[in-house]
Length: 255
Image 1 (cartoon, one colour):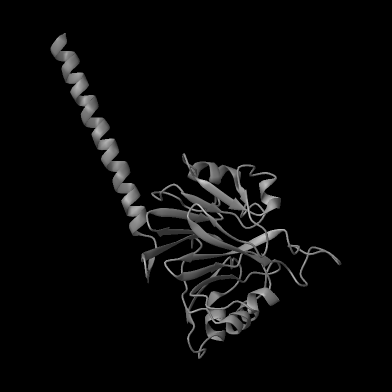
Image 2 (cartoon, one colour):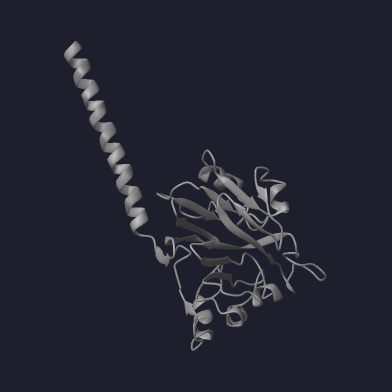
């Protein structure tokens, strides 16, 4: 009887080990299949992982930063967050369930006041503010519609409600525009190294308009994101010949 129990225990341990190996292999395959860009800074590399739509993950200096995590993205194999940035109250940005999955002990959530009404643990930063939060230099940039909305006299994104963000990592300025049209504040940005710009109608702006905005502040590298229903190649074509601006097209949506 004792030998039988020992054999059963040994078999259980082997099966448990195989399950762990299988799960680990699946996570590694998922990570390998992703498009990950590495940008060198004065303080080491920034790794950029597009997830979906407006959801991005950054890794820098031992920290994992998730921007607008959304349940429609595939987070298989991705690490939990040290910092989470939320831009707006809409469901594809403010996703309580996905935030909870990515949180761990000590995770810091950064958001505008409107988001903090629901994501109550968030540290609030307002348009125009600059703060050091969780060791990161963060600036909140206004994001809003100028003309587009659900009805006459209404806008999809009112000025002051949501935040775009500029993170400074190793001397590199990384800008996440959030849901916005081509505002004066965006056109006035200086020395942006990496920018993520939305381009979907009716909520933000069309590709050519987004490209015109990029021409105004000339980020060194620009990623079109949040473009469901739009053609990112149209954005890239509109920026051809713009000196000092590199367009990077990545897979943000399942085919």
